[in-house]
Image 1 (spheres, one colour):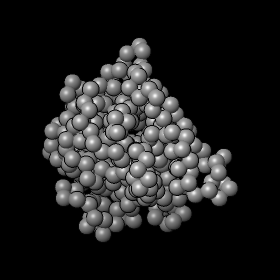
Image 2: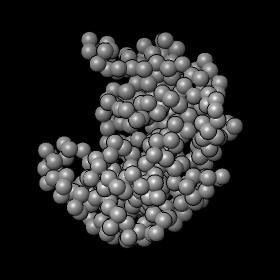
Image 3: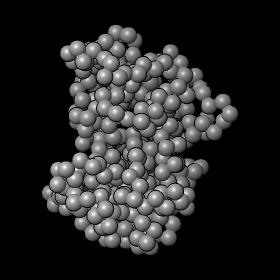
Length: 324
């Protein structure tokens, strides 16, 4: 197993190197093979204590990290804010320090406010605790593990024997939806541009404002027309539209959104014949993507994303758990 990993914390993909992506892809491939066995558990992190600190609701990400930790034989501490001392006035940093005192080695942190995982990571370093922090989604900042599982899913489709960054060189990938507020989009932009993909962002002007074009890295094109983004696309990533966007007057209605930006079978004729569609979930059927397309294995990679998520998160925990 690959061991030349030196990053204690994974907060953002902005400064990830191609070499680090390759290590994650190859390690995830090894664990994908483990998950295909009858006995899916390995003792790689036996004795390691992983604390899942999820300060906002999550089903897929939390369950995926928990299963990944169990497959690695780690001990797991699950945190629930509604039944924690936070309700009594304890600070988030004091909560983290409590788990350190219990012997936690890794924190998997999800929070509605951007910057919380980084703040905890800085405090862990200040204390010289040796605890690693993995960002499982923070506000409108980033969601590194989701982008990494998306990357792995695409690379596995292109070459299941040797998934690698080079496979995405020159591939056109359209990311469609609420780009402005999406932590998934931000992390995917960093990973895909590093891989040399041709990234196109599409959505209504309220969710992909003009100034956003100045914030994205080189190799990214912004569209308000879905058709331009889909033209000859190899992959399409759709993003969940949150209903509060309508109460904030950013969208007239979900029906209107689907009319102009929903991914349907008819619209796929603009893309490459073998185009594939991804979605981080949960999906609003008939809004971001038509129900029939979502369930069509010829086009949809959504179930593969969920499966890939366990292998990729096993890889991340394993690599971070090996840092002394």
